Length: 477
Ligand code: FAD
Ligand code: ZN
Image 1 (cartoon, helix red, strand yellow):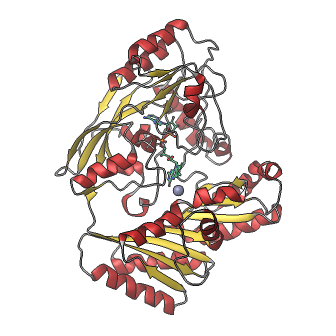
Image 2 (cartoon, protein in one colour; image 1 turned 180 degrees about the vertical axis):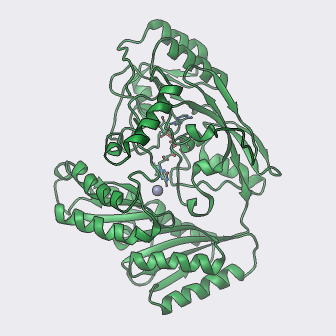
Image 3 (cartoon, rainbow, N blue to C red; image 1 turned 120 degrees about the horizontal axis):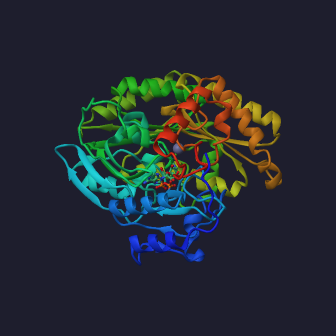
């Protein structure tokens, strides 16, 4: 759905927006707007007459109402770390960027309720810290956590490394506050654990990537802070062995595995080469690695004992070749740094054609084997770099360009390679966007796979909640 374009926004609109947010709440100079206009992957660069940065829900409401009165499109933005181009405006130059960044107040924290109420612009790491201060855990965690906002996390239904145990962003929410397309405020900030009074409206706005409403606040679920987290790094012979290992470790620890990531040797090599201060955690090289966290609510030895005996049994069964358990927080951080810097370390390897896909865990190994074979047969010399959240059946199936090849020629294969991989994912009953969303990048691709009835229902929701098509037009649908 695209908005009616107004090439030159009415001067009354621009003046009115400036008046609502005050002198510190807007940016009109294109040079100062730069970081709001380009997406994280630098795939899209847009233009805007004005970036507005309201400081309160009431200001957001008035901004949206004024835009609606002028038929002006709005692009909501949090930390602008999204990976599908959803948070930046189009090139048309008539879309207003609405940044939530100034709305970064933790409104309240209740340890007893295991709940926290926050502004949508709060940085994820600040929320994690506020929870820790009252001896609670907010488990959403991803490599962009120092920059991304909770509003962006909820709008993309972000995943990250703890989904296995705690669920995706939408599973961590008790209530929402949303500014609707006409500017009205829906106050759904109820911190209830149980509320079956009709449709669960908050879930409509989560994962909607800013196309149905502007999230301005949320009540988040908190959890007991684990007393200990053991981090392990394991060399395994194959992805199949890694899948087996997850099941064994979950069984042995009574489901205490909170993160379970996989990466190939090629990925570790890139990190060791390009990221300063990293070193190989194991003495010999292995084809694949697992990085896991196991958490426990007590600080006794039971968790370590069960991990060690499960790893020893897996070693005997040939599922594990070598393993190390971190003995200090610094060691654990060093292991996680390998995983977290992997996307950065891949950049010097040149062009990368990326996928963010999921399948049932039983099909995980088959997906990687088949996708690698198919892409290698089409683009000889391509270097597969599948890594990510095995515990959720979610893999970032990236392909680095052939060594010494031409980057532009390789990147021109993007769509063909996407189709190859996504067709296999689809056949295995998977999703072509496991955690990053559709945004602008996958808006067309999804039409190849999603049943027409589902697309029709999505359009019905869009028309009902945003009849003028002014909220983030051209994204998702
Ligand atoms: P933005 O990028 O600003 O926006 C994202 C989308 O949400 C856009 O469509 C925007 O219009 C909309 N939006 C933003 N705020 C609001 C709001 N308040 N109301 C309505 N709509 C809004 N994602 C994962 O799921 N798992 C990962 O492990 C992961 N790792 C990452 C690692 C790195 C290094 C980076 C750069 C990104 C990663 N991501 C990951 C992508 C992830 O989607 C974002 O990091 C994050 O969730 C987006 O938050 P943001 O505040 O930056 O949102
Ligand atoms: Zn991820």
